[in-house]
Image (cartoon, rainbow, N blue to C red; front, side):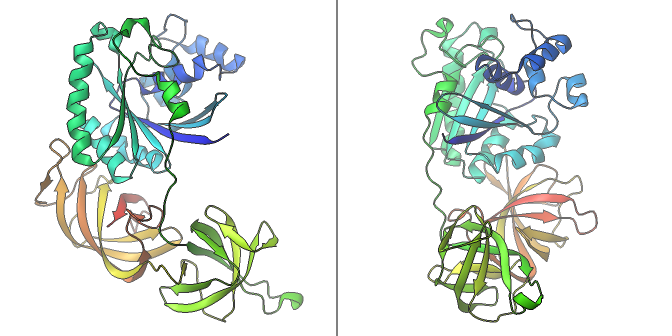
Length: 412
């Protein structure tokens, strides 16, 4: 049984937590003791006597305020598929948490309040879906019960969002008229929307086919150099890490980057046993035929399909820090296990989240703004373009003093 990872996104009080609670509740994925606790603490009860949002609002501050602050992960399954859900916060100041959840998701469910229509947070989250190359988006127009299940309102919001999707290149978008509180079109179709000809949201999530991720080249980054230095393994030197993309076979010719040295794989171990080939996602130990100086953060790449090795690169970033970004600011760029000193050489432009147009970056880039910048690193960075390899084409910027993440970056 395969696993679908999806994230719910939307503005404050659009009903994300209630939607997830409805999926868990109606799919019988709640234990009896959880249900009893839910009934005890429920304030905003539905017809079943429970507040479904409490299933995901796990922090005390979230329960007290009735909002989502951190990304809450929940798990459930049906007879067709297993699911991992990330419930992202809707407040603007928690956009950084939303990006974290979206980066590990296959699909995004964007909720829109039928009373409000498309708003700024809808656009911002859609931009993030586009930046992270989430190819499939489900737009759930929620609270249809509060607009008398109006087909005209549904079609109007759908038309507004289609313009956004076209501008962002979101080509596979499916629309659902729902009521998370009452359960309309969540698990089963509702008679209140007899004009709707599509499937329920759960049917869609069970059946949606995800494209296999096509990452260019075989990539492996060293996390740890293993040298036991004991008598029986006196000359042993192995390189531990995870296969980022592609696969590696014993005897493959590879390039050690950024040094650019060509060598050959002598041995591969997975789970302590020697194997002939290791695949993407597997932790592995690799040995090579040459005695080369290799350190944490160095990257092994298939010699036939090499990544970029540059000290200067253009990135599209979402700024996540309260302290504004200005040209000339110095940071650390974290690219998997490789960390380099970096400086923001220039800010090329920023994206207006209301019009989706490029605007001149006059002055500084503030919290949650999205901008294209040029970054220069102290040593060469090894990367692929994000469109060809999401895993090696993304990075984060870290404040050198506080060690806090200040930006999520897509390398172009």
